[in-house]
Image (cartoon, rainbow, N blue to C red; front, side, top):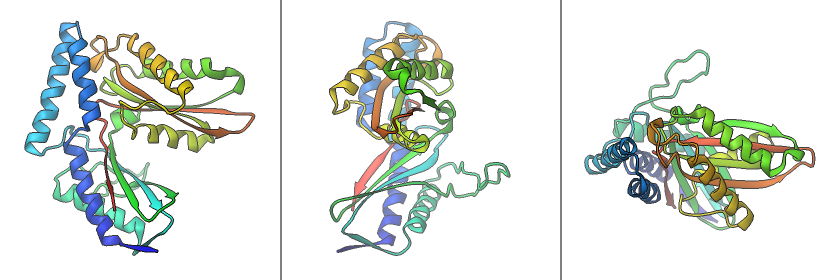
Amino acid sequence: MREIDAKLITETVAALAVEANCFLPADIKSRIEKARSEEKWETAQGILDKIIENYGIAARDNMPICQDTGVCCVFLRIGQDVHITGDLTEAVNAGVKKGYGEGYLRKSVVGDPLKRVNTGDNTPAMLYTEIVPGDKLEITVAPKGFGSENMSQLKMLKPSDGVEGVKAFVIKTVEEAGPNPCPPIVVGVGIGGTFDKAAYLAKKALMRSAEERNSDEFYAELENELLEKINALGIGPQGFGGRTTALAVNIETMPTHIAGLPVAVNINCHVTRHKSAVL
């Protein structure tokens, strides 16, 4: 049994929160730059140039890429041979508080969904845990802005709707979102499980590299097909038209009930931020 001090988790979460907000992942930058090189529409070219300039300034000056520094989604892959000394949830929230305070990141979390009083330190984090083999702890911090989160949808399809029903729902969700989620977007799709598991899968899909396709050839082809059809909508960067509405479509699946076909679509803006560390 390997012991990990909760204080180390706090320090790691704090550092990841700042880094994720200020440095765009290489796969997203690569996709944006590829979109710019292929864009023919002058207005879209100009918007993509500004996006590229913006994340360059953020990295150079260690400043947030976007003013919405998001709610902190923290994914933990906990090795079954790990023992954490201290309270795990408290350690994560202390890390969020420290990172958002010392990093001068905007605090956007309210303590109650209806009373709407800001917690003042961006806690609590949205915490997702998974028990895996081994003696390591993998931490991924993903700040999620709500301009895109608000455009996400979940639907309980009928099994008879099949793959065509899934395609129609994903495309309809993106089309209805239009310019609101700050395209070009990344589209996370969760298929299967239960009502709540489908949403989790869609969020988890956003953590996968935009350059990596699903390991199942059937779903890899579906990702490519959906990306092509979404880009054919012509919404384009920031909704002004152009070739690129989405940078990637990532699908995650799991088994489900014979009577159901849950599908969730979690949209992320072009600032698809996440940073990981292994302890």
